[in-house]
Length: 264
Length: 293
View 1: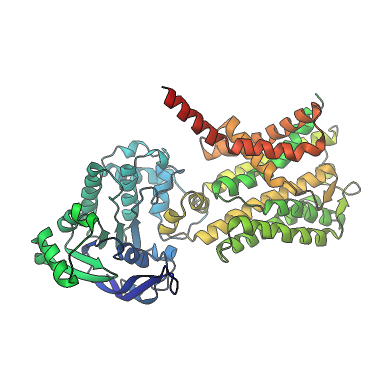
View 2: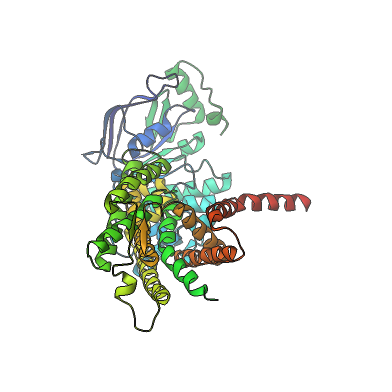
C-alpha cells in the first residue's frame, strides 16, 4: 500500500544548523499493516511522517501509495489518500467552526470544494451516527464550536475526521502524547478499534514503548535518520521491552539513552 | 438632529469596507493593507468610468473588478512568492497609488457634473442625503446576504478554515494558496465598491482618499464586535455593519464637541489601539482580581 524508497531529508543544508534528519529510509507496507514507529528525540520520526504527508519535499527517494508515485505532489493533493492526526490536539480541527462544519470538511477530504452548501442538513444523521461511536456525547453537540472541546475530545474528533473518508494510509504522529494518561489510553483504544474494524493501513509514531509493543502487527525503530529495528508478525507479538533494548544495543553498538523512551 | 441621516448613510457606505476588512482581518487572519490602495482604486475606476460616460452600475462593477485584481496581486505576493502578508499588502498599496493616478489622469476628479448612482436612480421627493441612505441600505443588504451565503458554501467554509487552521484544511485536501487569494479578492472587491460609493456620495474621487482606511475598517470591526457580539458568522456580519455606523456616530459626536477635523485620524488610531489592547488589560485585571481572592 505504501512504498518508501530510500528517502533522505536534510534541514538547513550547508549551515551550522544543518541536520540530516533522514539518511535513506526504505519501508514497504502491505494493505492493512498497522506499524508502530518509535525512536529517541531527533531520530527522524516526525520527519518521516511529514515527508509522507508532504509538509516539505524530500531531497531524494520515492514515495508511492497504492501504485501512485506521490513524491512530487503537494501536501493538499496527498490528502486524497492520507488521513492524519497530529501531536497537537489543536492542529487537526478548526476551533472557530462548529463540529458539524469540521466534519463536513473532512467528509469531502481530497475533493475540490464547490459552491454547494457546506454542511447540508441531510448529512446530519450520518455525522451523528459517526460521533456516537466515540462515546463522548458529541452527537448532541453538532453545532458547538470545536474550540469548546477538551484536548482529548478534539483528538478523538480529529481521528474520526481523518477516517471519515477511508484513507489509503492513516498517519498518527504521537497523537496521544499531549493528553493526560487516562485520556491518552481512551484515544489509543479508540484508535486500535477504528484501525482494526476498518483494516486501515496505519503508521503510528509513539514515544511509549509499551503502546508500540501492544498495538499493531509491526514495529520499527528509527535511530539517527535510519530504520534500526524492524520486527513483524509472530516475533513482534512476543517482543518485550527488554528484548527491544537488547536489539537496540546490538544494532546501534551503544546503549539506548533516551529518557523519554525508557521512562514511559 | 439633521446629522443622523448622513451619519447612518456614511456608515452604510463605509460598512462595505468594514466587511472587506473583516474578511481579511478576522476570517483569513491577515492584516491586509491593500485596502489603503483598493479603496481609492474603486473610487478612481468608478469616477473615470462615469466621466467617460458609463452608467453608474457598470462603473461600479468595473470598480469591484479592479479591486479584485488588487486583491489577487497581494494574494499572489504572499502565497506564491512567500512575501509576508503585511509587506505584500504594503507593496500593492504603494503600487496602486501610481495606478490610481494613471486611471484618473490627475489627482482629483469631480463627479458633480455627471450622473451618479444616487442621482440617476433618484426617487422623486427624496433628497440626495436620503437617496444615499436608500442606496447604501440596498448595497449593504445585498453584500451581507451574499457574504453569508458564500461563506456557507464549501469554498467559503474552506476559506474560513484556512484563517482558523491552515494545517487542518491542507490535511483535508484544500490548497490554501487558492483560498487565501480568493479571500483577498473578495475583500478588496468590497473595499473598492465601498470606495466607488463613497466617491459618488461625496461628489469626487481623490488619490489621497485611501489614507487611514485600514484603521477605519478595523475600528468598525472592533467597535461592532465589542458592542454587538460575535456569536455566529451572521452575528459578526451584522456587528461589523452596525460597528461602521457606530464609528461614524462617534466621529460625528466628537466633531460636534469641537474636536478639530485634522485630529480625526489621530483620534481613530488611538481608538483602535485602545480597543485592540483591551483583551490584554482585561486579562491583567482578571489576574489581579484572582490574586486578591
